[in-house]
Every structure is written in structure tokens, then in C-alpha cells.
Length: 121
Image (cartoon, rainbow, N blue to C red; front, side, top):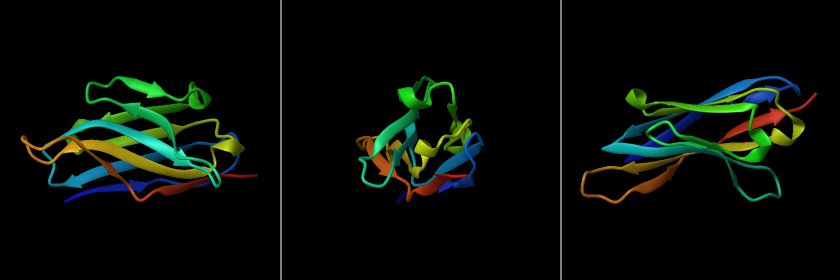
């Protein structure tokens, strides 16, 4: 079994900062790409940022220059540093990781349970 546990969400004023963390644990052989998605009420889930095991990153345009994704491979943990938060960043943020549980298994996507980020004055 593999679990992704997120933390760090909360309520913040516009212009403020938050850092999200997501730790993968359980029966893990290797963790590949890790990323953050978000879903606001009435909207589809969208990719926010992702980072490969080599450290290559990609961001959706709306967060470029404000958010930074990073990972600690030794801890199987991915982070999302969010600065200059805007009202429209309000959403449930989900962690996703592509994981192999054994050498001979296929790479499988796993999701965290989600953490609420609310930007409000």
C-alpha cells in the first residue's frame, strides 16, 4: 500500500504565503514525477506544478513566478511554496505521485486526500 499525506493548507490573506508538503510512504520501490493539482468549486482539477525525479519543473502559467515546487528524494516528499497568493488560488490542493511499488510493476499514479487553501481578506 502507498499513502500520500499532505499538510500545510489553511487560510491566508491576499499577498500572503503558504507552503504545502506531501510525503509518500508505504511499499515504494521508486518515485517518479511528483506534482500538485488544484480544484476550485465548479472547476475541473488542474495541474499547478510538477517536478521530475531529476528535478525538472513545470508550472501552469497562472502561478509562474509566484509558486515554487521542490522535492526531497530521500524523504519521498514534494513541497509547494506559494507566495503572493491571490483570491483565485483558493482551491483544494492535491498531491500526485507516479510510483513503482516493485521493480517489475508498472508506474502507477497515486493521489493525496487534498488540503484546502483559502485566500481571503
